[in-house]
Image 1 (cartoon, helix red, strand yellow):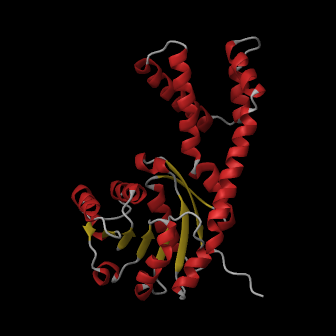
Image 2 (cartoon, rainbow, N blue to C red):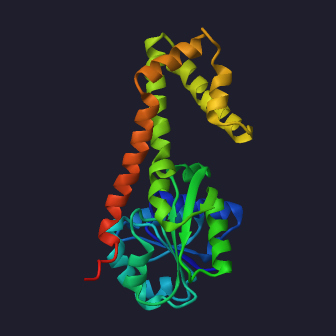
Image 3 (cartoon, one colour):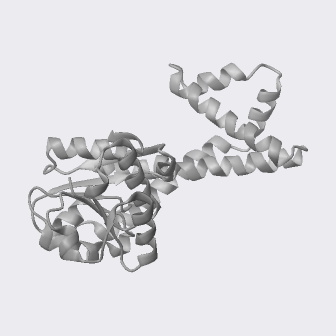
Length: 275
């Protein structure tokens, strides 16, 4: 199934790598292009043995899936470029934050399947948490192909499009929140006298272990936390300090604000209100 990636950044590369490794796509079916960075296309071509080109007619002729992996500001120009090659059996997959399905449908002005996706940067190691929303033109075959593609870089959930802003605030931006906590743990480790070569693997394994416990446990995170928190113990002392600083409330506010920002970024792509 001929698949064209417009945009050759880290997310496009993660999808290409995952799709090849999992067998979701054949190398010979993958094409990539970008606006002007020939060196980057050569990189992808050499590493993954895929096709790259700036020959628009050649790239999009008979393409079944087109993945829009460019910046949102370039959405309108990209849709103008692909418009002549779109037919009812085409599938558009967009990775652009804020760019609505309705905007894409209006710009293309013809019926075709559109899937809006919100992966995260952990796609680079095959651990993305991706949510996708589909328009009513997406066939069952196209849906299964998209699920196969995104499952090759992590887990995938189908949501309503209006939930994607919340997904963006929660899991789209989520890796950065975890890295932020790790930054604090690294600073604390240094302050309490642990060298980086000792503290870093301990921090990483702590995160991996906690994530695995959450994955296999039927209990809530709160129950797992309480199981670690012995009365009068070290964990309780630390948790009390976090509560005094309202860290949990700060994280809730953080995710709400990221969600609100996602909504603000999408405003230019919403249909104008009819008078």
